[in-house]
Image (cartoon, rainbow, N blue to C red; front, side, top):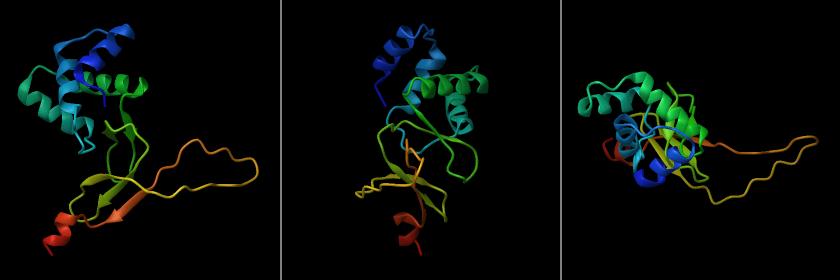
Length: 136
């Protein structure tokens, strides 16, 4: 994800207002690798800015996603999540603690079938994360 300054410029270029609430969301997302839900971000944001609304959080996240600055992902494990990492990657979900991790796969898959045009590939791995394996 781009820096707060770059996101501020991108929002202005898109004709969107820069508000303290949006600046807070930019800061909370920068370097965030937890793949947070909107509700989780809202809870953190409310501690710093009690007046922020869940609607504002969703609107900011949706604006970022529509601008290509954030991925909205459905991993089949509860509510939708938001991923600041917009690079090509896949995900690992820990069945024990529910954590989600970005993973890189060094294989190139080609799907060849009549009439199909592949635009993207999403792979979700499931198992136990290193922390949960170590605690067993």
